Image (cartoon, rainbow, N blue to C red; front, side, top):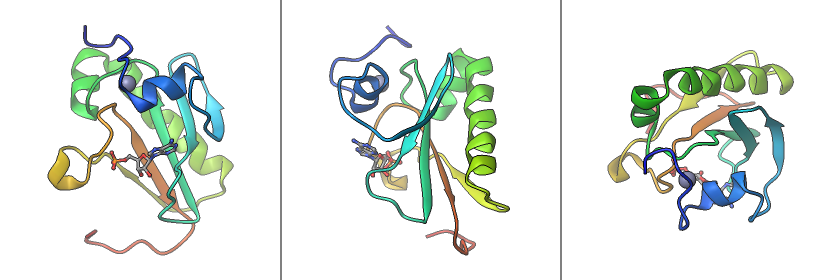
Length: 117
Ligand code: AMP
Ligand code: ZN
């Protein structure tokens, strides 16, 4: 069922506390934790607690929770004292998506090139 925890999903396991993570924030609907392979001085992932395979699927099914993810990303940026930052939702293997549970990458703390690679 869409939105239900998936037994084989790494991020569902982090939500349920079955896999450790460096959690920086938690709300009723979201968890934010440090990426295990950071690509910038600040690299935090903000995920919904519910399981959807990407950001668009989350927004279609649970628009309020999709907005919660964006608000939490801003709060992470504030707490990390980032004046500028980037939110990335890799969608599809060709764009680098490797975990099929919607997540926002919050990247900052260094200059960020545009266009991205
Ligand atoms: P993506 O490639 O966009 O699907 O992003 C998945 C991200 O999850 C990658 O940046 C990984 O480094 C990160 N990641 C994978 N396993 C863990 C973990 N156990 N804890 C924190 N971040 C992780
Ligand atoms: Zn999941």
